Length: 340
Image (cartoon, rainbow, N blue to C red; front, side, top):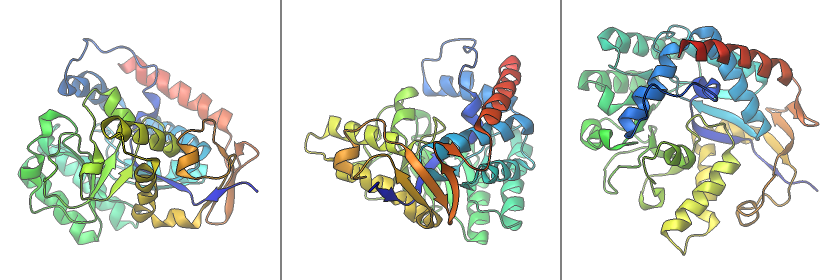
């Protein structure tokens, strides 16, 4: 009998980046993390509008569903399309048939008004009942007042803060900047350059493939006392793939490492998004056990139910046309790339 699991949770995603693939080369080759942000990701996010964001989110949600991921913890950054962006993403993901926990990444990178508008988008969406956290880009792009305002907004609404922490050396002051602000419901993405004895509260979101791609190093999350969950940082939403890479990266620094810790990081997603426990994924491989899956390729869903509703069957989504989504996303990608 085929194996089943609850729906998987991608604990750190950027749905706005689904259209990045195939984008033009940057004006100059970046050799630092700051350079990668400036030459690639910050140029990309500034070029997006709400129509592009809609189809990027639909494509990202479709690919998540095809990988057995039923909850995406998203972190949006579209500085020229802030207002309404969290609703656009939520509606797009819901249309595909899965779930999203939204956040807008507040930053002072675009001045005080940009920070204000980002905070307001988080407040608006939470006030309207959206499933969300308060998003912050990173301590190194925010003033102390902005960090404090985001923390206060999250506390007011009884939610955590979703923030990048020490992804690159530019943010090594994050523990000092965030001291006294973090709580257990915060999500701390990356933490590659975070000291082991950092003192921050919250769940660490491990994104091994993205960290390798951005050449920022290996977080070695087993060294932390914090809970650890797996994300993709916008490179798809295949949590099984993230598990496999997390395992071998762990083993690369600890020859005694087994697949079990990385599997526990995958399961930690259900602590962040317990709604995924009411979903069910029927897999092509049995058993869905870490000691099998770590060494097996080609594992894919046969059927996905979200809250009792079959949203994927016979190799295709049941609520949307995947051909249409990919075609429309391609059209929007062409618009986006032309702006770059």
